[in-house]
Image 1: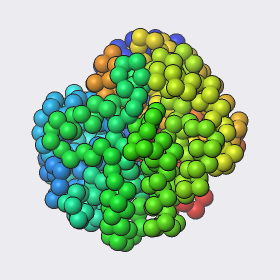
Image 2 (image 1 turned 60 degrees about the horizontal axis):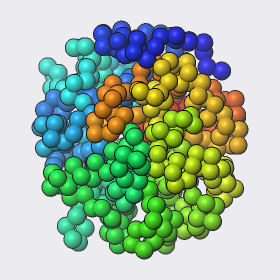
Image 3 (image 1 turned 90 degrees about the vertical axis):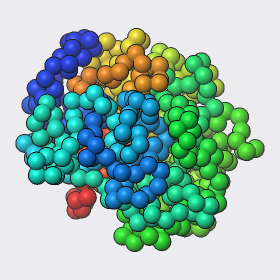
Length: 461
């Protein structure tokens, strides 16, 4: 069970505290939740609030893989706290895709963190007097910073000149190939778009900046990029691919959602049988459509439920409520477990939007209770949800009204509640996310894998 560490403080009270000394807040949570890895506490704070970069820590890469550091690929959402025009030098010389933290006063094990740029963050990546990069908080160096090296396959281009980074970027320190094959969403406008999602704006800002950002990626280009990765990833670091993109409410290129995304899986599995574990992030579709995904070769299905609370789902996911509806969405998730097996159905939720003003829960207690209800619902059926830590992107309705995101205490208590729910239902870490455990996890957009216990005999990443 989660350790008793309730907080009666309001959301505003939490945020007022966070405006003060961030070190004191972080260390207080480390002390109150000693069974949550210190690595996870820092990682959640970096994911929810972003990090700033000194010019010396930028990648020296724009759109071509010419530098030594693997640059941020903007693989689906911006995951930034400012728009590209507001990022200054970081928009011209991209920050790294991820950073790895070690050492420092908290004696951190190796911790992989997705980069979310925020020039106003109290966390700053910069070179010290010795020239080595470090992460600084409140002016104190708290960790050594490692940057991802440019993979050899990024240095090769497709026959048409497109970069592998544009067509098939890799994240999670090279573990996952992220194939956003449809870069916009057909839930469009204020009455349909999910209120925390900037997929459509991210598409617009990259096109406005003149960056290559292919709207619909041809199957042939995806196969060509994967062939380059297969040829040059000689150590086999890439272990899975995710097919995803915006929701399809009508058709794209004459195909519905299952057949549009499924055509890529079919082609990949025919060309590279068994090379990678195939995953798809799509809507909660009817069982016959889900069966097509499985028939095409997909082995893990992510029909994301986004937020558990009924009222918040209706308010924050208006398009999904209109076209499918919350109850039907959940029913379809349960149905999909009969096709893929419960362990291979892993719906995501956006951790933190439960507390987004003006409609979200005002206290951490209420938010955790609601989300735990959702965890128990799915886990009681053998389905293991996972979550992405909410980044309040500035062009989204919830990002505009909640630039600070959810309180850090919410995120730490969620990790506690999540691990306890896994134990209650006798579940282990879900497949397709790499190793679990602090110092081993590579999943970079939340700390749930860092917090779960490592499997016996699992190698250190």
